[in-house]
Image (cartoon, rainbow over all chains, first blue to last red; front, side, top):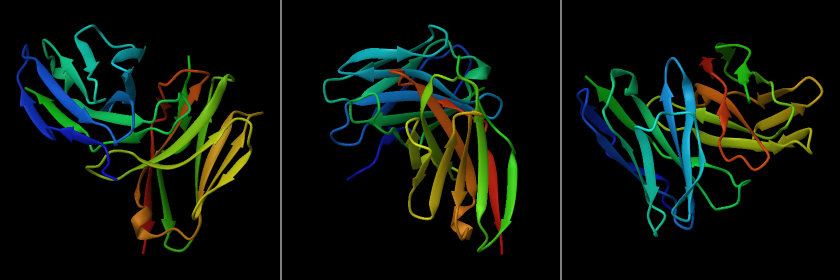
Length: 113
Length: 112
């Protein structure tokens, strides 16, 4: 069974731009979570989607948003990019129950110049 | 809120020895814990998890121990191999919360 896939793997943007990242979960998984990983802050939870609805949200500004489609694929968007948004953005999928294990994709490396 | 940390940022072990990676958490309500391994350039890879109604859980070459009294968990890796070199994260969650709170990670280096 294919794992979680994320596209693109690398992105370079400039301050003020916006960016959209994509995540395809493991087949059959209906929950998708997003995390930001930086050397200074480590891994931090952004949000989680299930059945096209945001079920949980972390402490990030409104510039960070996401959505989920009917096929469980998810996208996250960051508007008005700041230098501090440079990070590895990780997507994790799980079946659907809150206790199901989350499996991570390889991440998208975003660099903001 | 939840706070999860790790005791040591780096750990070096000889190939073939056992490794023990420690983690502490602050939220007494945390009832689910998970260990991930992250190799350079890759996303975190699931190793093993444990729920708060258990004290110990074993997998292939790995054992997780949970001590709820002192809010501590550990990951033991038996017969450590070069392929075990990676950053190891513990993460916790409580109740119905789906967001995992991650520790800062321990870099495990296996020496030949």
